Length: 331
Ligand code: ASN
Ligand code: CA
Ligand code: ZN
Ligand code: CA
Image (cartoon, rainbow, N blue to C red):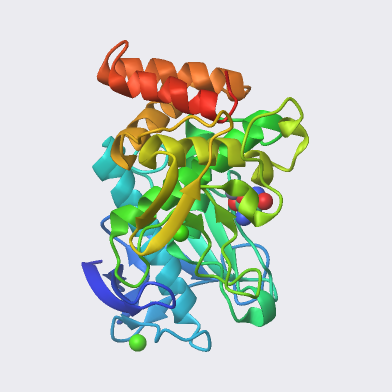
């Protein structure tokens, strides 16, 4: 019934506001009345269906520990809310499909499941609890990543294999990172790292690095004619690197206390145009020019067209797009 704002104690993002709804029988449901009615469900170890909708007596959710099963729900709900707000703020887009309809989120999937995923079939996001059920994959950049697979499916529809699959994966990293910067949360500052909070490698290192993707041991920094043979989470490196370089430029830089050092294939020195413009260019290319079969060469064309639309033909921004693709060997 009534739209409420509860207080959540998350694992990764500190104390946050979560949208809730007063339920007819008393108490509150974890249904966000303000963002299309996004619901967060407890799969309780199951792997299908929706389990049970999170419900709470006093609208104070989670306690920041994994033993409280509401905690992962707080992170997932917060991630969905920030991603929704980011699409609205940056692109004036009403939800994933642009129709004001919410997806939903499911947490506590399976047992010690070390992944999270988007499904077009359910139009929903699902999160495992990680190694030994101790590290839920619900951090803000991961949630933004998964939700942005829905955005890609609703726009370009990039096929999830070969180079188009790498572009699909990169789009999720680009907007997952953009959501993290947008949220401006002091407990989880914006960075160009993916999954730095979930300790997926067991040694505190992030899952992926956008400034120099090869730091993960598998991702490509530059295009080559065999890049499409890599797993899509590695061929994404070329576009992640493009986005970092276009935003921030090449060389050494420290942002929000994180140090980066981004190389170029041709030893060119690049000056970034800023993340905000890079986001606009990527979104316009994704939603206007990319298709299911767009490869890296076509992504170059799509983003050049987008930059021309947004900032003018031969604008500094369009020239930066060209120079940056060349720097990652997409010519
Ligand atoms: N977490 C992974 C991803 O979103 C799941 C997958 O491999 N599709 O990319
Ligand atoms: Ca409570
Ligand atoms: Zn993905
Ligand atoms: Ca991050």
